[in-house]
Each structure stands twice: as C-alpha cells, then as structure tokens.
Amino acid sequence: MKRVLYFSTAHADITETEVNGIVSAAKAKNTARNVTGALAYNGRNFCQLIEGEAETVDALLTTIAQDARHSGFKVMDEKPITARAFPDWSMHRVNDLEFQVLIDAMKT
Ligand SMILES: Cc1cc2nc3c(=O)[nH]c(=O)nc-3n(C[C@H](O)[C@H](O)[C@H](O)COP(=O)(O)O)c2cc1C
Image 1 (cartoon, protein in one colour):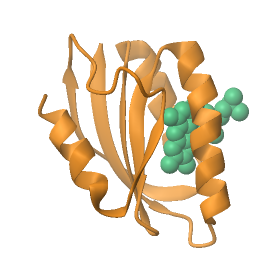
Image 2 (tube, protein in one colour):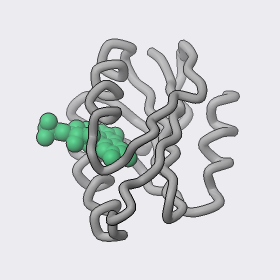
Image 3 (cartoon, helix red, strand yellow):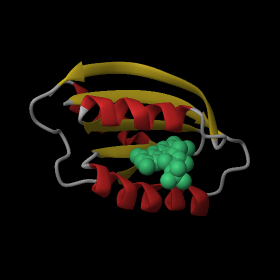
Image 4 (spheres, protein in one colour):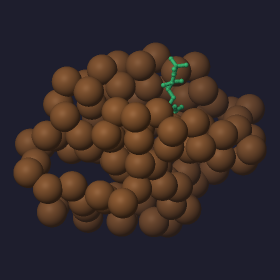
C-alpha cells in the first residue's frame, strides 16, 4: 500500500455545499476501491491524504489532479505503508486548521 499527501487550490467559485458533495461522493467511491483518507479545506486550499493499494491510489490521484474544481495540484509527500493512518475513514472532511492532522498522519 501507499499513502500520499497533496495540496491544491480550490476553484474560486466553489461553495461549501460543493465541497461536502465532493466528500460524500468520495466516501462511496473510496469504499468500493478500499481507499481511505481525509480531506481538509480551509476556504481556499485543499489538503488531502489518500491511502490504499499503490495502483489504485495512483489512478485516483491522476483523476483528482485533472478535476476542474481545483488547480495547483502538488504532491507534498508519498510513502509505502503497511498500515493505514485512517482505517475507519473512506474519506473524512476535517476543517480549517486541522491540516496539521493530515501532515502528522504522514509521519506514522
Ligand atoms: C479536492 C478533491 C478531492 C477529491 N477526492 C476524491 C476521492 O477521495 N475519491 C474519489 O473517488 N473522487 C475524489 N474526487 C473527485 C474526482 O476528482 C472525480 O471527480 C471522481 O473520482 C470522478 O468519478 P467518476 O469518474 O466515477 O465520475 C475529488 C475531487 C476534488 C476536487
């Protein structure tokens, strides 16, 4: 398995409702793919941690990177893992200043 952390900048017109929609759609799709992680949004930037089988994660990140709802997609860190940081979250929204929760989870 692998774990990846990326940052991006949300499209200027994105709404809270749309962000919540991204998370709820991601929950269903990630469950089907056995992907887990968390998404932080501070009103301008996204920070997302994604973990799962390497090929699955890489394919998903290729899709996410091309999503018009954000830009400036930049992988900050990635590493092979044997255990998940967020085994219970197919995708979980964390707020504002909790970006640090995701950054710390990369160290585990
Ligand atoms: C910030 C952000 C995070 C996203 N995270 C996920 C995710 O964790 N899982 C997922 O399936 N799609 C995620 N998406 C949506 C994908 O970019 C894409 O719209 C979706 O996977 C397309 O699915 P479909 O081809 O089945 O319509 C995210 C989009 C954005 C903008």
